[in-house]
Length: 349
Ligand SMILES: [Fe+2]
Ligand SMILES: [Fe+2]
Image (cartoon, rainbow, N blue to C red; front, side, top):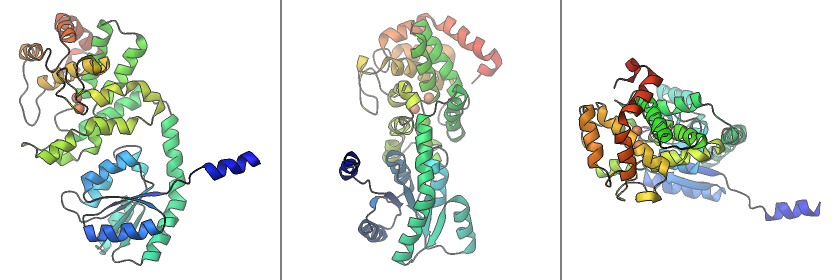
């Protein structure tokens, strides 16, 4: 008994974390003060994109979401959150001045509650408590379950491929790069476990793009600095999304480091040379190789020989020179192995 009470005394009570996404700074200030007084931990974001990223990184217990915001509406934010099994579970309450029937119904269909502004502070807190009591324990449990689950290769493949639905012109990319990465890893003599981790990591390499809004992923023109910054967050976001899943512990290097460069000019951590994990160095060659062979909204496809020249020219710059040499030397047999896995017809870009 003594032990028990000691444990209870020493365990800090974790506050319930609420994320507010609203573009109105005055409103944010007021509601933050109100919820902090009610003993909640409050995080905030003033637009949808930052809100989504905070949700990924912080995993709040509940999100209060405005609807009318520039760039992305609250409805669009909720739809992006729905793309990933974990953020899809975060309870969401719309908080909006829009009080017409159509918007309220749409909001109630998409999320857990809809509260119109202006509201009575006590009533808002009472409603949040209700939702937290009903939904939050289930949500926490679901996160626990997904953290401890082992996922089949087929499930990981579906997650990885779901990125292709939002990133135009990348259909088939996930499966092709996975095959190439596995073939290259095997030809380098890596062991079975490393090869399997490379397979999983390749499938999930761009999973962080699920947190990047579609209009940025598919923008035909050049990105603004701000948009580019968001795109460059996708490796870290991907890492944050899958690192709680224990069975994927060996497969995090590719999602996190596939945009690092041998010369240290990559992202997100500007690692260089063999500080970049081998799996990510292998993967970046096959990733760029496939992207160059493919037609994308912003560029035509290149032919095979030009692609190989390009990769050769990036030896020691973008890529590990030893790996480039090996890749080019074994190119025909690697391609044969990949084609055998797919059948020649499914292999086209
Ligand atoms: Fe990427
Ligand atoms: Fe890729």
